[in-house]
Length: 261
Image 1: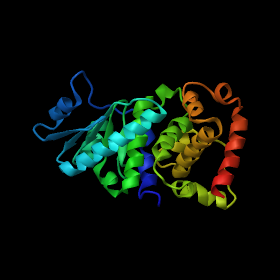
Image 2: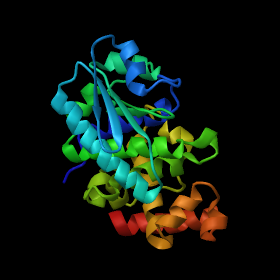
Image 3: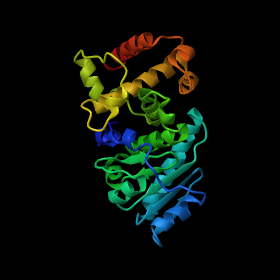
């Protein structure tokens, strides 16, 4: 199975839009969004999720709520319960307004503190597997509180969301990390874990940064167990893994060589 089309562009906006504002307040989400889309909102309720659409075919909304329910189950298995509210606007411009975002070109979805906003143009380009990965990734950000006000390293926040997203996707590692695999096969290994600047929209190795972060989290889960990866979210490498940052980096680089070369 190939990497979903548009993954590079899709990932570009996840970090920048993660903390954007959305509809808030004590009213139910469906009522709040109906205030934005008078008389035009359609609400579809799933077992574990709620999807609100604006001029989107009912079949698309039902498909999204089904994917969101599956994503919720995956997130719950790894992290814990998540409240899934997803907004599916008619246009990318509406999505940008809902998320308080400026540029959204090429994106498939955006997470805020408590909601996921779908970008209809980018979302339509994804394969079925790609849609599942994206929705699970974004709902992981919602469940974990994203970067928790900067207290979680960006490589861990993004890598963990991708770890959960790809966990049950059935996508081969070399396919999901195609850009990084190309570099590793050429004998080029990253010297350090990715830093916040590496995840900035337009960064020259943006796709590789996400792939590096994902494989770091995947390595931790395989060597120390998934629970250790979850505990790491609220602690540090030394306390949870018994490794220094340098030791983790060296072990991760060896893991990349084994997985991708």
